[in-house]
Image: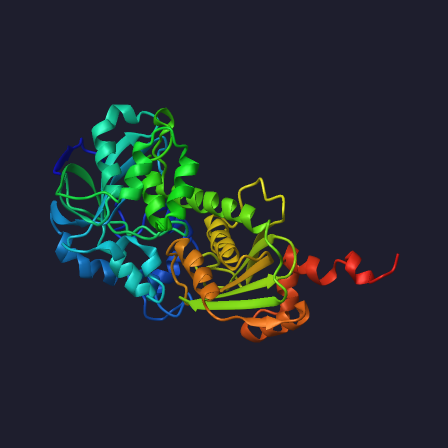
Length: 440
């Protein structure tokens, strides 16, 4: 199957800084920090980070520049991207490296655990994003383009693709705490895809135009399709009733799929018997420390994140910033303040409990230390929690004994974790009927 796609020029965003987009320079590196960067120049470490995030991205970009210093790229595209700026008029296009062969790893976060920040930035900076503007609510006007990219999103392996741009790909190595990073971008002039095959599971869900999108997502997950692959096709409007299909920005599609799968798994968990012990799991990656504490009580879930000074979301702080969100058996109605990480970790947690055929109340504690110099996406949380739950755990007969062990693994005192955790406060200080023994 060979497909040709033409487009009109699109010039979106600013390119005055070749390594940061506007929202990054206002958030990742705040106004107060920029003078430090000028004075430091990556040598004095005035920001107190272990390594300069600017230089990590700069050297990744330099390594790729000779591959993409052209208006034409031929390579094997492992995925697609749907932007969010300007919604409902957004930019869609392929993620295309100047490499032929099996490039699946470049767009499959499930394969990244154990890689360094440098590895991830280097891989993702090789992906050039083609830009073509569409209105997500009027996809009938762009049927061929959307169909072609939908097919790419459902292919069973990366597709050999040729793309011509209106200018050389430039600028902006995009970083986001929700979405995995990717490299420079350029307005797409034309694009040709070579022969490919669709993943039959995704193809079946796509052509069932009576199947609701949520049911499609859950069915695909039940048939062992990677969460990342479901998210990719979901963002391209590949599922749902024909008339209700819409493109979904990649950022939102990641959380939507995590949330749908997690909610369904939690309903299963709430029907299972309780664990009979306190369990503590852990995983340490990218200078993030994760501890998963399971309590033998009915379903409840909480994610507590502690950001050290000089980390990406606490760049100018002098103290550790702690934020948390939780839910009990009735779930939650408001979107979590922590963002997509909440839903990614909940999916991994419920996944484990369903597999174990047990129910528990779960607290996930995360210490993000200064070595976590740049965001790499919510996959980092989902895959770290999965990794922790795949490993061995420590078992305890009481909450206090479990927390004493947690204290031995973490720097932050348990007292402070408790003050910032609904579930820990409830578990340590709320008296229950069982505390009164046979009285009554």
